[in-house]
Image 1 (tube, helix red, strand yellow):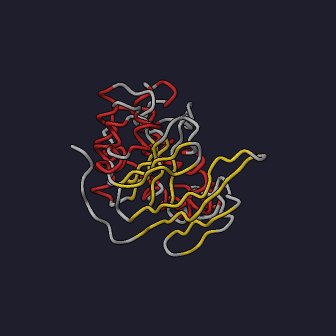
Image 2 (image 1 turned 120 degrees about the vertical axis):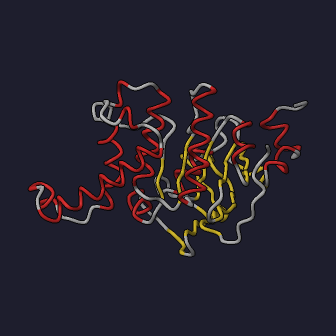
Image 3 (image 1 turned 180 degrees about the horizontal axis):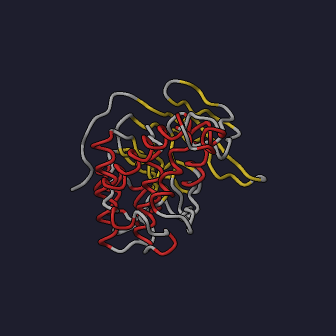
Length: 263
């Protein structure tokens, strides 16, 4: 299978002529692409191509010096990560960022924090509205635990879990926020073949069953070609390709820079 050959009429997020530099070093130069509502969009490229910098611009961790990012029809300037999260953008990271001493359930529960409406006093007292709200959030978390097939580790401290399961817990925490756009930074890095197959299945199920738009960075080209609707390719901070998996496989600039000449 190569790609899923679907069409998406509505743009959820657009990146327009983004340039980002650090101390005179260009991380991104005049990058433009869009992410359509409902698609799986991949960003690929060699190490140092600017992929993570691009995700950091989308979720507000970095602020580009030039260009614009438009999300749901509204141009965003100087948006902070917590503001992006409040507007429906969730994120996972290359290096697992979980609370290692906390259980799977409690880690995923932290993903619901932005959705909690009762004040700190009510939450501290754990009565009335706060108690009712926590019950509802725990139900949502339990649904995610069941969806990701991690019921057997729901009470286990995440620091004791195998790497692949920790990555699944991190996905669960991101899903707990109820995102419209889910940014996945190398979700399968360090996994064995079986773990990668499981993660691919969950990513596709999140997209199909929840309708979540997904933008992911991934180095495994077979994974990218199988699960992505469209692929954008970066090299040394510049865009060198953008299209369907079939189009990217035939792009000579991509072959030379990323796939390797002769493959």
